Length: 430
Ligand SMILES: [Zn+2]
Image 1 (cartoon, rainbow, N blue to C red):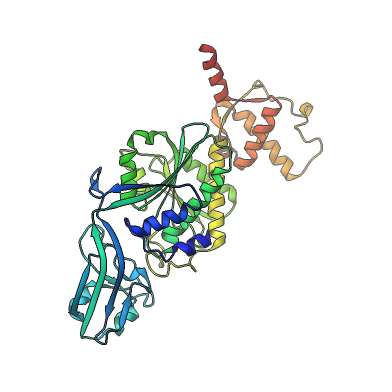
Image 2: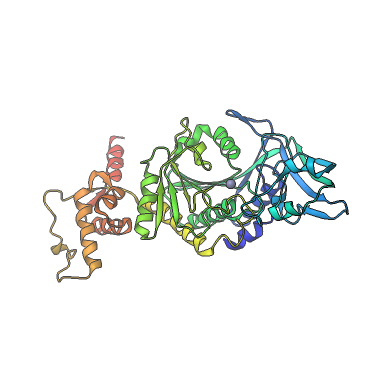
């Protein structure tokens, strides 16, 4: 994951343009992503797909002809979506187009002007302070023309058409945590899911933030009802504990599944309520869709100083954070896959576990005690109305332990899956 981030870091991405294409075609070497192109001007709900932006070069030269700000040193130096510009001007005229961070004098900020025709440069406060009155040559060799919005989509079919949606944004330039960490974890997760047995169909989206999600929803409105669970992955590679932002529904199975997995991990984490601000969960959870889609992150966006600055660089993401994020996502998917509802086939008083070899004969280890408690809870709550997740929540035991207990009880014919029961009945009717 870190190697992929290192490769993609120098690419100048925006919400459209060749940077997104280059990024997606690199990811195609990892997973069989389908690349979609949507023409500029296409109406998508209340929005229109914007003109396509591309950039070759940009700089500010001082009177001696020296490049004092150079796009090729950092693609953050140019305000994303800057219109083409080639002028000589005095510092006083240039100054309103320069953005810096006085509190973080070494860092370059990240700024965009997607929906307002403008141009600008982002510089460090140090660079700004070195600029003296005089004439400067300002060049932005960009194009803003009818073209396309590009996004990547991968569908990995499962046994049913019920879907799990995983989405990340691919529109930020040289920023590692905000953007590339989500891209890397999504790619690794797709690779992991492809090798597993699947009840669900998995859909992976690598899309430009906001306009990409709006465009995808507009084009797929007829089929989004298949989405049973979803996760937006962003800002997931830094060294803070994992944090989960609930879906708008708040108590959807995905909200409970992530909460349970984070609880079971025993590691520090944070659970936050939904709010209509953040990443593409805003679009998936807009009231007209209200999809069960939450967001898994680490330091919440906007709440760490490196956010949207040049300090969100390769040092800001940690390989162990990426690995933990990918493992957590796989564990969440496993929980959703395994969260079945069972019926106790011996519901009148407790079944005699001892005669089936399921009861520890001599006071055993804590592990054995926990397995026994898991069997008792699973037997007691398996009335066709409680899922294994319900049982894990109510018992305080790990989902994994409950699920293993259910497997043992099924083997000993003390449990039967409720859904299978219903299917058999339907079969008989036919
Ligand atoms: Zn961002």
